[in-house]
Image (cartoon, rainbow, N blue to C red):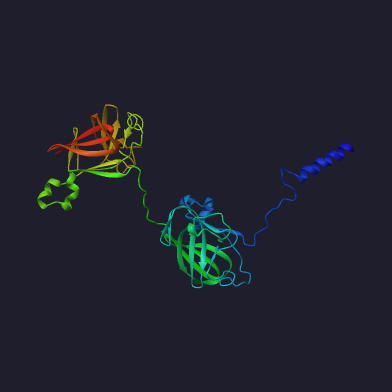
Length: 366
């Protein structure tokens, strides 16, 4: 009897305290304004059921919002007062996730999460997108966090909608409308996916080198100067900085191929046929690479354009190469630099310099 009572006590203890969860634990009830999710494109939400190319489609937008019911109430002008900012739903602030850069109201929004609210008026709404997240509604929200605003006119809905809803309507390949509808009101927020992209300031800025140097100033030259300024060679390259690093032998390991710059492969344009060593290169554009060693470099011209650096270079498209000695000078060049040095009427050297190292690539004009 004694052992039976002990066993019953142990069982009761386990039932009342199972890994910290007691019978008194609180669980959420069904919300009267349930959470809803809308995607654009809509069928991306169930793409694991799709086949072919649709199986690999990518989402562009996802909206998370709470969907209150009308319940015989007058919504706009009463439940949602005119002239006051509204969370677009209930509970937490409505949140939109853009999977790519978009344009809304003339502002470009980077991929990421934004909360959405609207200043509601009878004939128009001002819809605001904010970078502030994890807020309950829009009360006391940080107005300075607004990153885009768009004024949209209100429309009469085709039928009275009982529950607040957000969906999407495709306009064309590059534009969709985020549709908000409740009661008899409909608004459409244009979202553009084909937005202008502007690069930031590159830490290895691009530059151009010309031969002859004044060939880039033809609009400033006198008529009698134009013939001598006919362009023969142009080089486009990225200019990385030393920044205290040891360049040759460490940053640029000996025996490895280099793009002769940064970012895209360095590109050389010949405006007439030239000789590189014993190889003739016709007028045109070429990538320039170099195999760097302590005492010599091998320059390589390649026709696989465009290319980003030297990775996976198609060696079958190498069309000329030449090995040249390197020299050391006293002047330190912080930024990679390329210039031309005229040798005679038929020969020019393309000189690459960085730190104290210099390599001169001879170019002969036909």
